[in-house]
Amino acid sequence: MIITRATEYAIRALLYLARQPRGEIVYKKDICSHQHITPAFLTKILQPLIKDGIVGSQRGVGGGFFLRKDPSEVTLLDVVIAQEGPLYLNDCLSDGESCEREVFCPVHGAWKEVRQDMMATLQRYSFAQLVQMEKTNLEKLGR
Image (cartoon, rainbow, N blue to C red; front, side):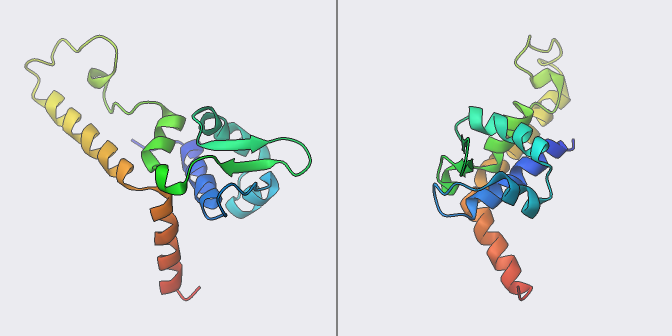
């Protein structure tokens, strides 16, 4: 499984927003230039995050984007689900009809455990932590 480019760029855009003071409106052009995202693509990838109440937008002169939530309250899982939808890994775990093989299939339990572990790991990484990790990494590099 590879996350989509939209998800990758949404994470980068959110990381950029998380570095800014809380509630500060960031111009679209600034996010685009710092994260190498086209304006049209940025608007597209931020729409699900706006819908989920993670990002806010302001139109007009002085408009742009801002985090609605504190970076400590937003996780990688939040962004992945906003962009990709629920994580299933396999059809047998989807919300649809239960898999007819679930009762005896030895792989069903493995898929379920992998899914739970992956979601738990993504949930552990808040954007506040990611910002701090980035600062630490840059300091190690002398930047």
